[in-house]
Length: 480
Ligand code: 4AD
Ligand code: MG
Image 1 (tube, rainbow, N blue to C red):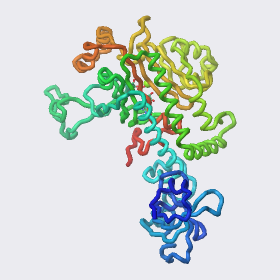
Image 2 (image 1 turned 90 degrees about the vertical axis):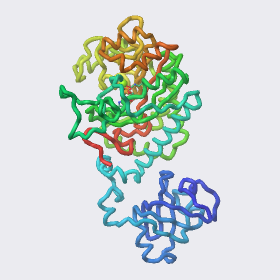
Image 3 (image 1 turned 180 degrees about the vertical axis):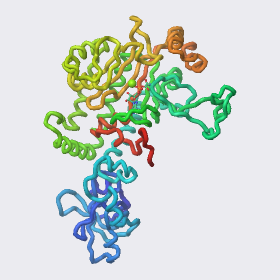
Image 4 (image 1 turned 30 degrees about the horizontal axis):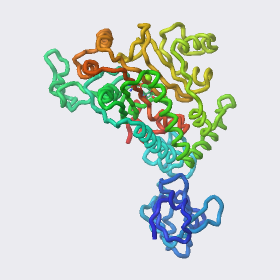
């Protein structure tokens, strides 16, 4: 007798083997056919019961959502749709699910909107779509580690609680152990952080980059993969207040090398899921195709999900300087006809997502790497170019997603960095340790950050970022 996962049993050819399998009932037809799912695969295992062998009480309790243990014989299936099935000898009810109560939840077998599913995020993982998305998310995480481990990168865990607020990437969440009804104050009325847990002001990290840089300048090549937090009030389908970021950092690597690695890395992880997640991808592809059918002709995607992934894997990302991009945008139809919300008038303008999407989806029709941005719309640590006005920044823009990667070559020259910090009013005392790396064996180095949920969105075709993370945190929402 072997205890197996549904995924293993469905692949097995050991017919007539006695098996035990646990799972949740997805459906029960004709008092005879149980569709059993245990999360190991999107596919259900058909368990055929002989109602004469089971007590009436047991039969009554085989209901949608119930947890059961089935013992039986693995046989070649008579019906279509599956190779094998289990002829059940016994069914044990492990956990009941009252049908009257199930009816009131998203477990009830009918179509629910994604909004409705979000309200019951603790149950939605038992649906086909969310099972597929979360398994793909897990496989993508594995592929990310594989890529870096195979290519001489070391995994580094940078702090979640930080004392520096120098990234400038967004608003930060404060960390404190103060009783907020009774906060210690200085004589001038300001908060006395010396009495707080860390003896100073602290925040949740917006990026592990600065600490990551210090480690790259010792371990050579590193990557982080952890949660980051941004208190921006962005209610969009691409922003979370808590998201996971992958941040590689490479010593002795310039901007061109940075772009090469980012492109190779993205292609590697997408190839990995194409090769290893066929069933889940096929399901999501069909879901997306159905969703597309309900859209007007003009909004439908010319490619299905697999084709989209293959397209990214097989084609070079288009590399375009910010200056070229501005020219393209200035002369574009939506700009001339004032269709953009923000009209591009001159060099130096910050690009909004409408502009990024125009470049990727309408103009180039492929992933785009934009580089050499104006210095004053980018962070202080980016390497100043010889022209004195642009920095060696790069953003990777993806169709349907917009910015998926942001990165740069870092300013390795101490005096240039100090000047920049002064100009931006960043206290050198706060970042003494960061500046030390420019004092002791400084070198050309680069890195980037990839938004993990945006990658999962692209790989699964899910339209809203809230549906690719188990428990999304967004403005006014921290349920569960
Ligand atoms: O462009 P960002 O802000 O870059 C940095 O934080 C750098 N320190 C990274 C580095 O060079 N090591 O963020 C990087 C990526 C974005 O391109 C986007 O994919 C994702 O993180 N991202 C978000 N994802 C979800 N929700 C948000 N609020 C996000 N903000 C950024
Ligand atoms: Mg960015």
